[in-house]
Structures are given as C-alpha cells and as structure tokens.
Amino acid sequence: MTGDVDFRELDDLFENAPCGFLSLSPDGRIARVNTTLCGWLDRSQQSLLGAQFTSLLTAGGRIHYETHFAPMLQMSGELDAISVDLVRADDSRLPVFVDANAKTDAAGNVVLIRVAVQDARERRSYEKELLEERRRAERERARVGVLAATLQRALLPPSLSPPSGLDAAAYHHPASSDEVGGDFYDLFPLSSTQWGFFLGDVSGKGAAAAAVTSLTRYTLRSAAVYDPDPIAVLHNLDTVLSHEYHGDDPHFCTVIFGVLTKREDTSSQSGGWDVELASGGHPPALLLRADGTAGYVSTAGGQFVGILSEAHFVSARCQLGPCDTLVLYTDGLTEARTGIGSQRYDDDGALLEFATAHAPASAADIVAALEQLLAGFGSGLDDDTAILALGAPPDR
Image 1 (tube, helix red, strand yellow):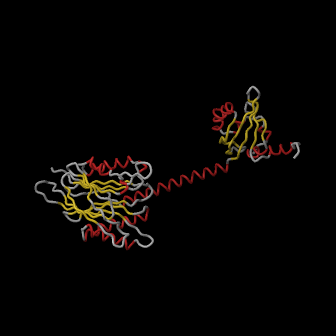
Image 2 (image 1 turned 180 degrees about the vertical axis):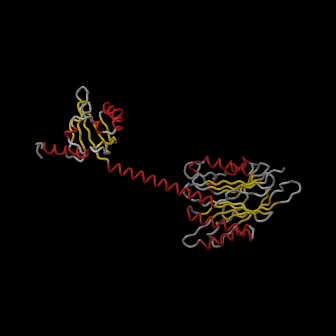
Image 3 (image 1 turned 90 degrees about the horizontal axis):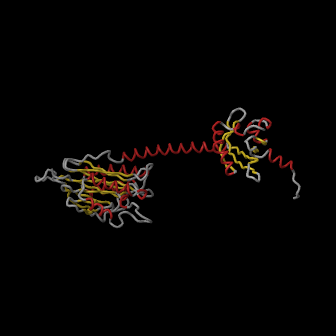
C-alpha cells in the first residue's frame, strides 16, 4: 500500500455510492450532489445545484425541517436517521432516511452541511406489511376473543332462577379473554321441593376443556333426574368421563354436586333448606351462619372425577336456616398469588377468616365481596375462578 491517493476512485466512490450524498451551504443551498441521488430523483445535477434542499421535500417535510431539523442541526451539529419523503421529478414520493452533520470554522460557525440519504422504500414497504400484519393479528385476536367469550357464556347459565325461599348469586372470572376455561356451575329444579346445584373445574383450557365442560354439565343434570343422590351422580359422571376420555387423552374434573330440599316450618315463612352434597376432589364449601360464624362443610377424601379406576367420593349434610349462606368456589380463588414466589392466598387460612369477617351475609353480598377480593389480586389471579352462593333469606 502506497501513500498515493487515487482521487479518481474517491470521486467514483462519492458519485456512485449506494446512498445519496449532498453538500449544503450554510443557507441550505445544494453545493454538491452525487449521481446516485440524482438518479433516484430523476433530476440532473445542474438542476439541483444551487437549489434549496427544502425544495426537494414535501410540504410537511419542509415544515419539519425548518422548525425541527435545522435548529437541531445548528445546536448539536448532527442529525441521525430522520425519516422524510423527497419529491421526484414526476412528483412521486421517495421515502428516505437522512443523516447530516455540520462542518464549522474556528469560531463555531457552520460553513458546510454534509448530508447522507438512504433509500427507505424497502424499509417503508416492510413497515407497512408489518403494520398490516399486526392489524390482521389484532383483528384475529378480537375474533378469537369474541368466539371464546361466546363459548364461555354457553357453558354457564345465563342467569340463576332460584325458587321461592332461596337466594342465589354467582360470579365467573375468566383468566384469559381469548381462551375458554373449564370452570362451571349451575342451579336447576329436580321437583317442586328439590333443587340441584353444582360447581366444578375441568382440567385444561381451550376447545378440549370446553367439550369436557359441556359433557360434564349435561351429565350432572341428566344423572340427577334419575337418581338425585349426590354420590350416585358423581359416580355416573365418573363413568362417562372415564369412558369418553381415556388412554393418552385423559380429562378429569373436580366438582361439588348437591341437592337442596325445602323444609316445611310452620313457625317461619322461609322454612329453610336441607342440603346434601358430595365432593369429587373439590375444595370444601363454606357455610356462613346467621350467628356471625363461618366454617367449612367437610368433604375431605373425595377424589378427582374421571381419572381413577375406582374413585371415592365423600358426602356431607348441612342446613340452611334464615340468613345462612352456602358458598362454593374454584381453586382460582384459593391459589391466587399474593406475594413473592409461591405464596398463595389461602395457604394460611385466609379464606375462612374472610368468610368469618363477612358473616352473616346474603348470597349477593358475599359474592360481591369475593368479586372485590379477586379484583385486588391483579396479575396474581392467573386462573379462572367461579363462585356460587346459595342462601336462605331472613324470616319475613
């Protein structure tokens, strides 16, 4: 390598570089422009020399240059990757990125402005495609969200219609707006004096879980018509799920199924209700009593439904007198994250304390209180949650 400089190669590099080059006088007039940029603009060098650089910009670009770019260049001495459109000879637009720096004299006065222009047509086209793809994805996400919400509503009763002498309220919190969960509940008549109810949680999410949930709800209601004994109903459901889903694609659920029987009490108008319920691996129901106490209706030992060869289910009995309320819930409530690491809401008995603090409470009041509690978990509530409360109103 010698110290000789081949000015012809330097001149060729300037004229035919893969980007446009301009030199501007301090007042913004074009002092020099390379062949590359002239070709992009379909203009001759003679027509550009002496012209104001702003004459190559669109009306909006000129405003931005005068109000933002030029002052910034004066203050900092450089511009980086400014996106503008240049006007070609046929008035079409050429999207470009502009970089510039200023040459100053010893006194700090600008004597020359160097400008590099990068063709941004492919980049702009890519950005448009990316934006359109994002919009398409958002439309698809919205469509999936509508379908998921519609399907989720189809798996839950549109409203609860309890019989005279019984109050009922429910709440469902979906963890995802675009994926169907497996929580479910229902309340339905069996006879003029008996009503069935259930609440549960199917394993998994999405369309597969929705199919299992639909089958589970249908089976529970149908089985109760033939034999309302809660243990028998769960065994019937266990048989159906084991038959339909086995081998490499097992599906199971946890569920509480119960029967309410109207008590006739001539000393009060409400009479109250006898409750018999059975659990298949589900968290125990809470009973909020009229005297301000609360406790669990123990069904410990009940096993998951649909996955074990000889599942064991446990039943229990209780009564709903005036102002007593029975609360069923899924584990989205008890397992909500409340702190750092694996800390869960009900790890230390917080739910029972919450129930005791709110007892006595009507079905609507305790569901509203639990809904507010769930809202306070924020991102810690990462699973679907369903709540069903059944209560006997006060004597009139």
